[in-house]
Amino acid sequence: MPGHVYKSIELTGSSQTSIEDAVNTAVAKASQSIRNIKWLQVVETRAYLEDNKVAYWQVTVKLGFTVE
Image (cartoon, rainbow, N blue to C red; front, top):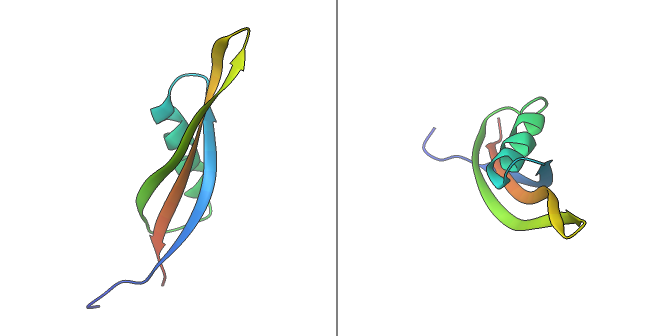
């Protein structure tokens, strides 16, 4: 196939550990129902605070996958 067609979705993963773990959480969940995920773009990073400390990270990503 000379070119690919991609579809993208946006979702938010969260983690009490790290930003990277929040991204991996989102990708792992998406991969349970989406095949051929090829790329991601970090759209937004934020943190939820409790007692003036980061309780968990929230990372919104856009995932791209090839259309079959």
